Image 1 (cartoon, one colour):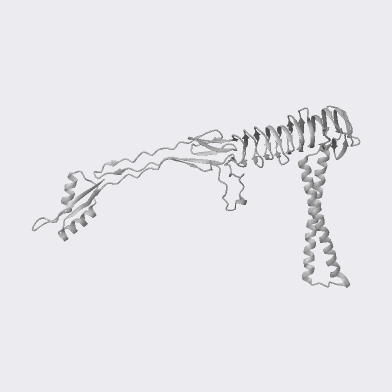
Image 2 (cartoon, rainbow, N blue to C red):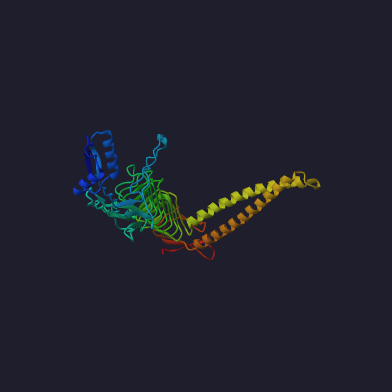
Length: 452
């Protein structure tokens, strides 16, 4: 709010303009917020130039300082980030739709900033002008979110952050309605994933915890930190499942499975590679028609083999994860041994030249280099011995686990099936029924008994 005055200079013997007179008149009108310096300059100018002045700012109020509204600061993405664009069409993977946001326990998700009040102002009459009352923002902690002070909101579990209205929550399960295909892209999530439909060819579903598929998985890949449940089947040689927990599926045809826990197949296994660090059970009457099936503890099926003479191999007693580590370590050992053989030959050749004819024939710097090579050789030799000891320990553990395995066929075992326990093989030459196989601890041969 402002007040403007018009000034007219004195004429003749008239009384010149005076600040005190103006202040007195304005005070009688109740004006308080005078701008005395501006008025003095205007009066002096008006009298000096003998020209009237119009709309001189004489009083001005102080406006209120506006408040700061309350606000919610979200610190994590709530939407799927878009995949990076590329100018090269051949480089674009249309299966990649971007990263699905996920959080971990203890992660700060949001801050609720309270409103900050404004400051009062004054009008030209000296009256207070109250500031506008600030509005508060609202944020509540939904499921999976904690807030001890109502200001800081923290994730309580792994999952996908979600804001619905004023409620911030973390959903531990990401649900895909329908199929995983080009409309969804590959799925990677630090929680559990549920797909109500199928997983189409070439796509990936990766979850830190569990995966549940309502339909089929065809020529696709599943990676789960824990359990996998598939209401349909696994189809295709390109289908791969890697699970840190257990697997339950209707049937397996051509897929490759690596499962740390138990595997339950409702119907049958036809071709493919099936590995379990626990047990494998096939409930259906078709049983294991063909394929390479291996479990640490037990294989239990209604039947095994096929009249079509398809290859069927049943193996128990081997931890495939540990075996893979042993094989990898064995490869490293062989590679290191080859390198050491080359170094040994080099050392021998150089030493022969240096110490032939009773004295060194090469410069001192070269002999120093030889000493350095010898030091490195000693370190590599020590590393090789450590690796061999580790391999021996792992192989001993493999041997202990092997003696516990059982293969049990509840109905029919057909000719051509290979039974393997502790790298000992037998081939079934005639049909057998209600039979079990285990390792004889006395002579380490495979023994038969009735189904158990």
